Amino acid sequence: MLPWFGWASLLLLVVGTVWGLAFAPSDFRQGNSFRIFYIHVPSAILAQSVFMMMAVAAVVGLVWRMKLAFMFIRVAAPIGASITFLALFTGAVWGKPTWGTWWVWDARLTSTLIQFFIYLAIIGLFEAIENMETAARTAAVACIVGVVNLPIIKFSVNWWNTLHQPATFKLTEPPSMATEMWLPGLVMLLGFYSLFATLVLMRMRNGILLQERRTNWVREYLEKQRVL
Amino acid sequence: MRKIRKRRLQLVILLLVGVGATTAIALTALQQNINLFYSPAQIVAGEVQPGERLRAGGMVVPGTVTRDSDSLAVRFDVTDYQGQVTIEYTGILPDLFEEGQGIVAVGRLQSAGLVVADEVLAKHDEEYMPPEVARALEAAEEAMRTLEAE
View: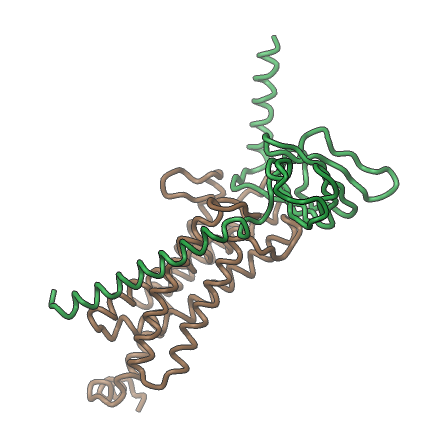
């Protein structure tokens, strides 16, 4: 599974970047600055869906006491935080030429910043609490509390006056942009998801080996890999 | 499902509902503070006192933009189709500033209906279009109008 996702993400990201930056048409009002779209939107979508996955894992972990679910939260949180940072950063870079400012305290931007801090809090809980099981359960509760922020981010542009524009991609309607413009975005989105899958699988593998380092099967596996 | 799991699931759901409800109540209470800007209708209705700092947002009314010939001062009206206020601003406008487009002005309400802004931000909508398509659309609209005129 791992090499598949790895190669898929490499291929999709390269194709999406070249297509989006070089071949897709520019926007009639924003010109070329709109091309940040191809990094900003996929990273923002992924930042939220990673959190959703973590919250689902948190429920599974808390209810069924599944170690793997907690492991997922632990390995996914730093990736999610990085992606959220990427979304905020590209948003600022995009905001400067279009809106005329790097940052405003509008509902969409602020709620995304809060989500970034929640990610950091979850990472912090894992680092701060020595006992792995207590840390995992506390972080899982934080995930469930933090998931309340997701609908706020999603609907912030509809509930309040914001500087940020409403969503271009909606589940129920066709996207409000030309096909040759959103197609590279879709490729980038799939690339981001594959990259996330690759990173999570790699980190999960390491995490499991570390957690089970005293068991026999890990010793046998590592000997077979000629690591020991 | 075993009893203990059911119990845990109930706790998780209770937590989610509790936190959700609390947040919803808090956000409703803060409704007005979360809005980034006042709409022209709200300003005209007197929701802001003259002299207060505010952000005003709306669409630039086509034909109202007047620029000073020897400074960067500019004056224009914004509307939300329910009210109209005038905005005065001295400085460089963002690239996307255009008649008929949305903006947010940060400044002080001078008197009823006049905002002196020290910063103007441009809003853009979620519609993206290649330039050729935009030109084609414009041409089509033009053709429609001439047809109607005839």
